[in-house]
Structures are given as structure tokens and as C-alpha cells.
Length: 352
Image (cartoon, rainbow, N blue to C red; front, side, top):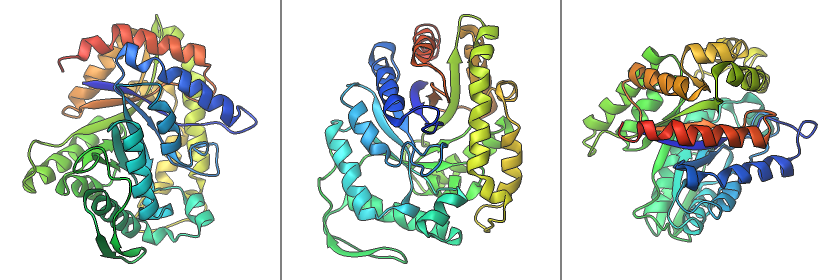
């Protein structure tokens, strides 16, 4: 199993400036190569403390790629709903070149009503924009002189530049949550799968959909999965809970606020039950997350137990993407956590 680090800004200007947030993040990137963290990941969101400091993940990842020479650079994930595929393809290939062929291109549908509203994009078109965008990105990165006629974007005889360093293109990862259709789409098209740690039995079933679709389509192997977790490792579990607990709870409160549009009338058949999901998320804290082994907050021994437990619950996964600096956690605490996890946890899973 591999372990990487993920940056999901969860602050606004009153709490921490963008300059301070990203400088602290880059100081944590410096630990990746010595400690064996295999990737660096960040998001695309807008206009709100929930992710809004990262409107373009490729900007940060270009900088991070010059601080780590081994870790892969993961967009977690870009949003075709708000981007022209011609621009995204060029930016992705440029990052692949700058990082010397270390880009993993994660792509997501977008799910926050306020972002659709501010961009003037109809929520009902989210899936269509997503699937069209993925197909166009894949073609632009893989082929030259591409012509495509879509519902939202069309172009003729386009060769996107620069060409990717990885051939035929960087790996594409599909962000999936609770919708079996998205897991099936990823597997059928031969894309990798990035998901969140919902209940183990439910995710076991969804990953099964992904692997079954992969094999039914005749792709070699069985695909690859990356799951996102919060992580804070301290010498003992009580200390870890005390130091990380407030930030974990604050993360979910900020998420619930960002997604409040679902409770205020936003509705579409493509996001069934999201109003109820917001209610559930608003009640999450470090204890509920630990109970589900969805947040690795504890001593090294307990982190190992939680990782093993969740791996068993879901029938196995390949990569853990660890959010290491939730909310207002200081860079010093995040560094100490990464160092302890790198020394005492990562080596235990080298052969899993």
C-alpha cells in the first residue's frame, strides 16, 4: 500500500492568509521524499473557505513538483463543469512536463450548488458536462489533430501542446462518492478510481462495481483505487484526539456550510439525497470518523489497526491519500505527525 499527502484548504482570510497556507503546505511537501510519501494532492474549489484557496490545483502542484523529486502530483480533482477542455488539456500536459512525467489527473463532477450558481452552470447538466469533458480531455492528451463535437464544447483539428511526458497520457482518476454509476463508468473506461471512506460495507460494494466493470470491459489487471482519509498521528491516542479533534469537527462544519444549497432548495436528479447527506456530514466529528476507521487519528499502533481494519472492510485498496493539516493545525504539529507516521506506520504496509 502507498501513502501520500493531500491538501484541502479549509480556511478563509480571517483565519489564515492564502500566502501562509500554501507556504506551510510547501514546507510539508519537503518531508515527502525522506519519509516515503508517494504523492501530493490538492483540490479544485471556489469562493468559500471549503477548498476555495485552491481554484487551480495545477499551480500548487507545479511548485510542489520542484520540492519533491519522487512523489506523484495528483489533481484531486479538476472540474470539467467549470473549465474548457482545451485549456485543461494544455495545463495538464504542462504540469506533466514540469514534473518530469509525474502527473495523475483526477477528475470530478463538482457537487456544490453555490459554485454552479456563481459560474452560471445548470446543475442538471453536471453529469453530461463531466462525461463530455473527460472524453475530450482523454482525446486531447492521447491524440493529435483532434476533432470533437459536443453539447458544451466543440473543436476541430486541434493538437494540444505541450504533448504529455507520459505516453500515451497521464493516468486518469475518476472521483466517485456514493453513486454506483460513477464507479461503473470509471471501470468500464479503464480509469483509476479515487473515493472517500464511507461505510465499509457500502464502499466494498461500490468498489466491487468498479472492479467488475473494469474486467467486463476487458482491461488488463483489475484497476486501482485511492481513498482519502484525515490523518493525525501522535505518541498516544488521547493526545492525537485532543490535538486534532477540533480541526476534524471544523472541517465537516465548513463542508456542511459550503453544501448548504442542497438544504435550501437546490435539486437535480443527478445528486439524489444530497440534502440528507449534508445533515449527516454536519454531525461528523473525530469520534464518529474514528469509529468507522475513516480518520486515522491516534497513536502509530492504533493508526495501523484502523488502516488494516478499513482495508479489510472494503476488500482492499491501493493508495491512502492523507489530509495532514486540517483547518487551523499548525505546520509544526502537522510535521511531527507526518514524521511519526512515516517512521512507524508506512513501513508496516510495504508488502500489503
